[in-house]
Structures are given as C-alpha cells and as structure tokens.
Amino acid sequence: MTSFRALILAAAIPVVVSGAGAQSPARPPATDSQLPAANRQPSTADSQPPKAKVGKTTAKKQFKAPVVRVDSEAKLDSIYNLRWPVKGPDPLPGSILPGKRIIAYYGNPMSKRMGVLGEYAPDQMLAMLDAEVKAWTLADPSTPVQPALHLIAVVAQAGPGTDGKYRARMPDTLVERVASWAARRNALVFLDIQVGKSTLTEELPRLEKFLSRPNFHLGIDPEFSMKNGGIPGKRIGTYDAEDVNYASRFLQDVVTRHKLTPKVLVVHRFTRKGVTNTPKIKLDPRVQVVMHMDGFGPPHLKRGTFRSWIKAEPVQFVGWKQFYKARNDHPRTTIAEILRLNPRPVYIQYQ
Image 1 (tube, rainbow, N blue to C red):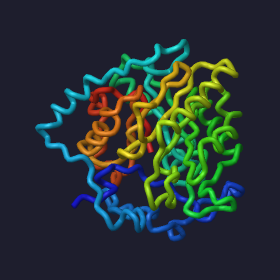
Image 2: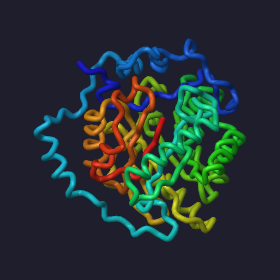
Image 3: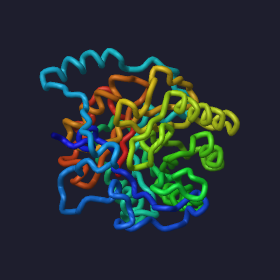
Image 4: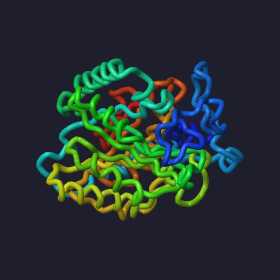
C-alpha cells in the first residue's frame, strides 16, 4: 500500500532543532543523527518519496487519500469548476493578486535541509530564482512575475524549549539578512510561522515591525500547529478558519494603521483537517488569501491533493509547491501542467 506521506503529499518536514527553545534562536540546526526518526532525511540515493515515518501515532496506520478513478477526474473537475472564480472583494490599488504571479523561494538560511534559502549560497540561489522567473515569464507572458523569498521565521521544534512551546523564533538579524537578499531582486519577503504549541496570537505581534514594511507578507503552516496535542513532526497539526481569520485581521490592521497596500496571506494545506471550516474564512480587500497546495509526489498525486483540498473548498486564490529534490517530486510537475490547472495558481513556492 502506498505510504502515508506519499499518499497525502505531506510537505517535507523541516529540520527540527532538538532542544532549542524560543530563548535560544541562534543555536545551529541539529545534525541528522540528533533528529527524531520522523525528521531524518532519506539517503540522497533514494529517488522515491520517503515512506511513512511520522511518529508512533501515524506510522502504525496507513492513511488513505481520496481515491479518484481516472474516468471520474473530469466529472469532479466539472463540478468543482462551478465554484470558481470565488466571488470576493475587488482588488484595491496596489494589490499583487491576481495581476501578478508570485514565484517564491522557501527555507531558512540556518539549515541546508529546510529549503532553497539555506541550501545554496545567496548569489547562486538568486541566480536560480532569476531562471525560474524567466521560465514562468516565457510560459505565461500575460501574467507578470513577482519574485519572493519565503523565510521560516518561527521554526517548529522536536523539543519543548525553555517555555514548552516547541518552537524557535529566528533572530531579527536573520530576517534582515534575507530582506537584504530580496532587495537585490526587488522581491517580496514572506515570514512563515510554525507555531508548535504556541499560537498565532503569541507569535504575530512580535513580527509587526517587519510586516509593517510594504514588501513583507505572511505565511502560516497548519502542519506544525499542535493545538490538538502531539509533537511537531510526529503528528500533523491543524488550523481552523478562526485562526486564518485572526491572521487576516492582524494584517488588515497593519495595512490600515501603516497605510499600506494589501498584504498576501499564504496558508499551507495538504490534508482535509489541515484547515477546518474553510467556508467561514472571511475575505477583506486589505488581505489576499492564498490556499497553498503544500505537498510532494508525482504530478497525478499532487493534482489529486489540489483537487480535493484546494479546488473543492474555494477560499480566494491558490498556490502550488514545487520541490527540486527528485525524492520529493519525481517527476516534477512541469510549468505547462501547472498552467493547465483550474483555478490557475498565482503563488508558486520552490523548496
């Protein structure tokens, strides 16, 4: 039977810095041997998606993603197509979406295992981003491309830390370093939040000093929100519509008080329970909400997740995750295939 992780297309779990708490954000990432089994990376020789090793709770049980017959895909798409486009507020002046497509590089410079931002030297990383921007521009000249760097600014942890929150806050100096890279490409900066056993109400206020800048935006990751218990990396977390609404209201207030153009809010999702009560997510013209298909696998599996959890439950805009490593996306979904999706993703994240 197909493994849990491959089947539901879970995003690759970031390196979890064992034992590092909120008061010691500068501690270097743990070595692979120090990580819980759930978070160790497979061998680079392994070209297949990793098998289920997400902790005692899930490893013993095979989870099933929606099973869709090939001859039923067209029927489902025709049904879900009627739900798009979403009737929402008209874009305000200065809105990024849907006029542009965001191409974002994701990760954390403190770890080579968490994504592109830490895996490559800055000059090489930015050159790679330039190449992706060019490829998307050539593939869809009608939609201007906006580059972005997506930094994990609050990182879920395997250990509780000094305050028991299972998360580490990255230092301001790291945020400024990524901001300086973004400035070299006139790129946006996304701050991504993995709350662990903390909450958005605890984590967002300390980031307002950055979010009040015009080019800073926000990402929130339900996978590492352990509001129902468990340890990050051993159990998949969840957000409710009210959590998304809180993040949106926070950004709305930032936009109003600082007289900014609208912010983008990216919400990662790859499971049914990843975001609950999506019809209750409230839209406001000051914040543009992207429901991001955050997972790995071959194209047909990723399309299935996109259909089941993103397309079937419309919110506003949609996004799509791309992995560079073959063990995560094998083969990688092509730009042409992504552009054939309906609704068409306006936020593409590379990890």
